[in-house]
Length: 218
Image (tube, rainbow, N blue to C red; front, side, top):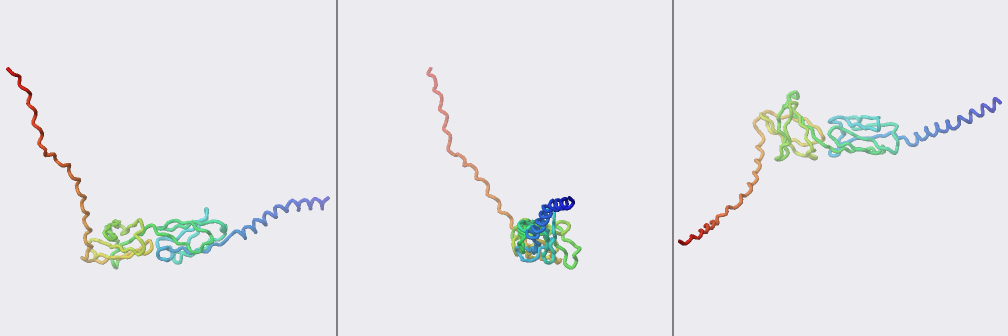
């Protein structure tokens, strides 16, 4: 009787043990440790100048090394995707098997300081691209330029009391110094005024004289 009861208890535990084993083995077979590197699509540099990239899967997140762009994300479902975010870049989703993740820049943040004094921020410095004025720096000496000016785009920094300076866009954030001087930027071209709409032609045809009323005979 006791042996029969013990066998019954063991038999009732078998399905539970099978389920646990299936879950563990399934996790080993389907789980993956993701090894990746996040880079700027325009420069091939690691993403991290404006802040490290964040990799997310559901409620879990992982941060890439800002100096190398490298990260390791353990225990992810093999057939799934992760979201990748970074300041100044377009958010993207990639499979867990992808090792190199390339992010597209959305904006460029420029900081302008006085040469030799990184604590002296230059406010109201105009930033130009060709003949287009992209805006002026704020009191902190920075300006966010959006949309992205383009790979290796040339910008011109123009600040009162400082020499003009041409710089090259690289990545999504850069700090530049300007030197006191009188080599100011040339004035921007004055927009050509739109032609005024032509007036309707004046009708110079003389009007007909009124026909006199017939005079009654006496």
